Image (cartoon, rainbow, N blue to C red; front, top):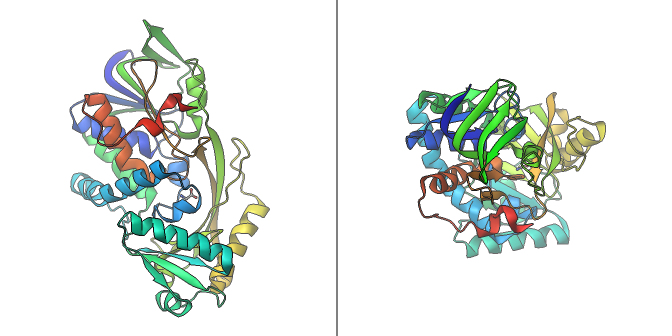
Length: 370
Ligand code: GLY
């Protein structure tokens, strides 16, 4: 593996694969390294929602909201290009999303999200108790209000990842899986090579896209970044998706109609380190939350459960850009939004690598902001 690349991407999740695919399309020789198999961490565990407004219930940071809206706009083109390149199905469903509320606090939070969407020029419709039931007849009787976002959608993130891997492979990207980076060789303030058990991997530019594991890799370069794993547990139910279109967000869960007769209920938010245990408490919380919104789900069979680790930063913003090591770029810390932010991240990092002017202000996402 002792060869020179234009770019080495460390971390084969959706962010790393999207960047590699884009750079390979721009003519770069790219190698992607991962300590395990590709897209099997947060990229696999996610529910694939492309619903930026609902995410505002978790972080109201304006730069994040703008970044999510921009990436959401890019999604149809991103999917279209992948379909053209690979012919692979991605499960892109454009049925909108429905946020529902009960009680004073939840209704106020929803009203605030609606105002932000309006201010950003995003189509959104406030619904009365009666109207919300016209959109989704299975909702619990105590749901008082809702907002419908017709522009929201979701993808099957696992299919999307497979398609990205195929597209990148077709463009000549090389992949080295089960290959941890154990150290780096530095020379004159730059990284000369990544050291792996299979040998040195040299490159002009190194990009770290290892999600929750990025901090450990950066430590070996003497860089401390504020990044911690936040566990999200998920439950899969055998429910025909048509039963529950569009996807639903309540204050403490989301319900996503997937392909293949599956519906996903997610997700917990737990600061428990690198622990992907599915717990009785986690599953109970999710099932209680889901059945309190759609009581009929109580009769459905539970088919699968899993947990993933979101890479969170102290301000919930991703880390995007160069570092004081001149040929090191970071694209990590996407927290709850790795799937949604993949197209804009690939575009912005590609602009950095190719020396183009950035199409989006990167300063709120700088690595040295902590
Ligand atoms: N974006 C949803 C989640 O992280 O649970």
